[in-house]
Length: 497
Image (tube, rainbow, N blue to C red; front, top):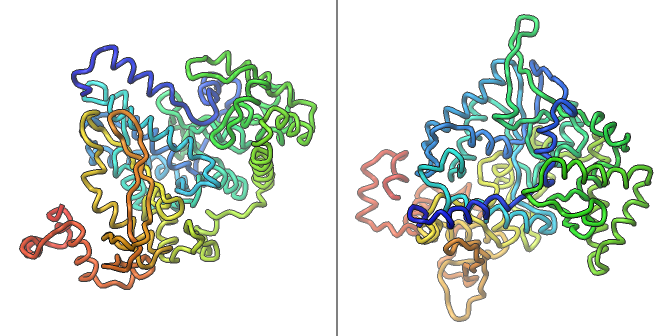
């Protein structure tokens, strides 16, 4: 248990958390430490801003004093903290568009990153206790739900993408010609107007403009960055990101050739400067085609075609962003014209339109798409004792029930009850065992016996039918149902639990 761990064990845990790094390694720290060189003053008021909602959510929660993360969080404090943040925009007549990441992944490119993040949250959850919770926050289970609820209450436009939102955010910024608010290092190489949000070291202040309040902040200047490194062409920025190391294209062999070595978490700002300088100097003067061929020359033969497609996609998407000419799903969602863009299951069946619309309006957690589309699921790790069972196990019956409903898109006869002759459908579930992440399988049975409700039929099901299924999953007998009937509807879920 963490409470009785030795100093050596605690130090090992801390190293385990710190060694896990995602994004473009070291870039955010580098730019933050060189604000005067690459940042310009910016005044934000009476305008639109696109918010990288997931990134801002985590940073906001990290600055919520007294949230009691070690005890699962005091939600009323977190709610008030989120309201205070939104009030900054309201006071200055700024209209945010909140864009959240989706749960899908192109060809499982970010599977490794997703697993790394899960391990990091698990390690943080184990290491977090009352004496360390101010330094090691763990986003609570309903943190995202509360943030979206606050944003909707302030009448912000709130959108959840199908895939990771970075490209969509950058494209929307180009189409609408407005800045992005984020602290994500990936945005430095998009060449867009980026307002850095990294409290408390980079935060906002208020000033008066024509007698009205405005937000004074710092904006990353792409031109200054390109000029600093020998007037590198704007079109080469995607290659800089790839060669410095990002979440989509893992090219350690190429990074060693182009920048000297793969940087570890512990290496400092000067090393990042050296790596950027070496990468940009080698790219400078080359056309994209020759640079691409040189990069591919360092890739193992059996990976060349896959890596080529990934890099070409990044370059093509960057051109769309630069010219604001790409197809924007976010724009379609905001205009309520996204019905022609379906979400497809693992077996390539379109998900019901009611579900896709509700999902894109942030009415469902992003990670549930992994169940339908990948047959995989990673629970959002919480603060737990290492010696105790994984917290998801306490709700495994509920997890199996809603997973079966989701899987009904591909398997109409899916059931929670097994039989010898039934076709088995499995989900790969990421499970914490001690301090390790293991992959377990959760079985379902496509036998038509006591079928679960079909996902397509959910909107038409009566309240009584839904409640009967809910009671069956929670194993609530008739006596208990009679007790819950004594309470108002908004208390029944709590009483059942």
